[in-house]
Image (cartoon, rainbow, N blue to C red; front, top):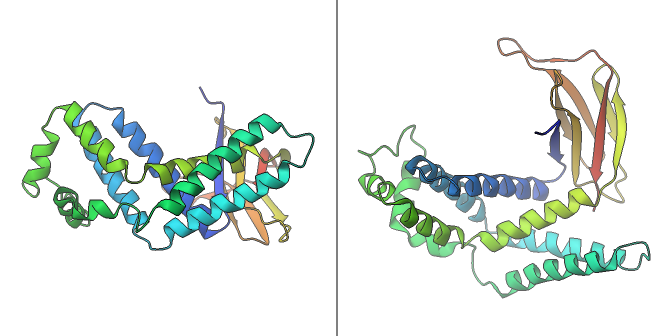
Length: 255
């Protein structure tokens, strides 16, 4: 059981998009482990969100640039004698594999699914609350009634159009998180602020606190600085900043 909870805040739009994709990929993997029609329904809805993000014309370029940026950063690390060369070589091999695959991929990501009549019909109804009911989409109702093995086969096929990009996203974010050092800080009266070195831009801020604490971390920031407010959750009133001095673990992911 986790004894801590971590809050994260991306500090640029590219990392924000990667983290959304990471979250959706985690959700759909969880849905695929279920055997009920409702699990498949949730998986389809998540898949459509993934497809929506990849409908942006610049998304492939953004991910490719981020992979190349990380590859360059790890190449520079190879000159450091204190770095585990075997692990570093494995990371570079994985990054360069994804870079090669994306360079060889022509056209928008997932463009084949634009011809999928079933997914198109579900997408068209998704803006309506409860718009995918059985009487609205009898074809979807029929698909959900299939045995789990058949539904999972279809879902795996649809997801395969995005999987390389999603796995690359997972790798990049994992590398960013694992390559950063953790410090112990204190938020005086529930507030903490830190200036950043713009010559070495911070990509992601992470705040870790005990899981049983009575507050949550609200992070905001830009490439110049970020601030953290530890808020008390009040369900029927506006949340307020805790007036306590709060110790927490801070990770600034620069890589």
